[in-house]
Length: 310
Image (cartoon, rainbow, N blue to C red; front, side, top):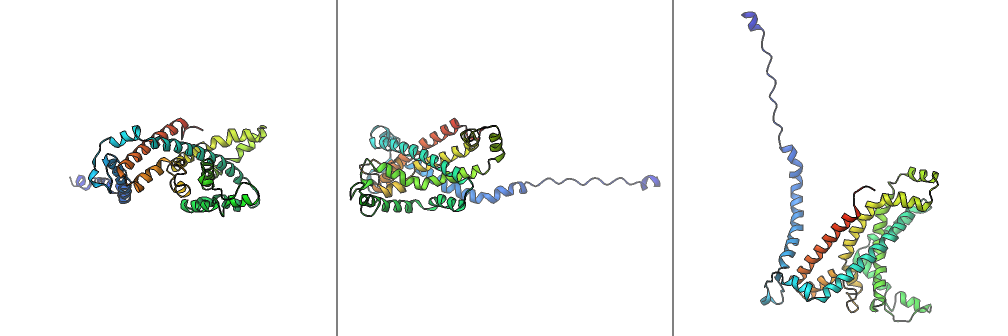
């Protein structure tokens, strides 16, 4: 009995403590304040726009304020020809601007990806317009297009054109003039993104293509473009949204004129809300613009197969 008692039982293994859920939740708790703050800044304005789109709200005419239901939306699609005109011009503006910016940005990115003397300085000069604010860009081009001291004055001195001509006041020249002004600032955006993606293309692919006798064009078509697919899709989508919402440049250059020929839908919304104080109708226009952008973005990503195989 004494010998049996001397043989002690092995101690029981320590009971595993249940893993605390706090460490797993800690990252979410840390980002919660910032996430809630961002959600408030984003959700509140969006919900406010949706709310006011169903209201007749004009601070200068408070006796007319009240619930309008879908009356503002009915007015947009049935009684407002300016909505259709500004929407058509917005589509034209986005298509031309994004297409030209992509073309010139791709060309500059391909040039900047080559090795040559002064490449760092050349890249800095190409990218510098993107660092200029939209209002300052507009001010620069307003001075350049000034009929007394701008480009037309120097062209007239050389015998090209007449004195006192304003490209921003002529319906036949205002659109190309505005396009050129926005190209100056928009092209570097594409050049930056595309050049960054070009840096990751393996040189072995080009060397193997040269060994196989592929021309420069075939290398560009079968190697460079497929590699740049996602970068081009993303950059064109982002730039299309920004150009659709472009207000500062056109407002400063033309104010939507002459005769409303350069009024985009966002500029029309700004004039409706700020000048006419019709915030209810402007909110309805904003809601329609939001739905249009959302639908077009989804269709574009779907058709382009963004993120798929290259």
